[in-house]
Length: 107
Image (cartoon, rainbow, N blue to C red):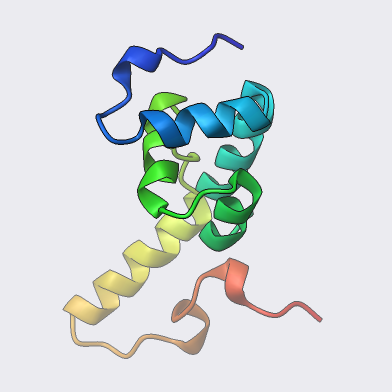
């Protein structure tokens, strides 16, 4: 992994980011940020693991380490498009389209 370009850090975040980098390796920081950004970790948990008090530090770290958004889920995109089509045409949206597939309880 290439270390981040610390010259890109916005003013006011230097101290907090330096403290995080003193406690954790870049790989550990990236792991937490990727799990947070990709939905596997709540922001409060990420803040606790990184030991930061301000959410802006996480946003700055995401930018600094260039953490990318996960690719869109084609099935979810299709569900949203169909739901929007039904809503705009005034039709009733079936129950199975009202919430993301990932939210449904599996038995």
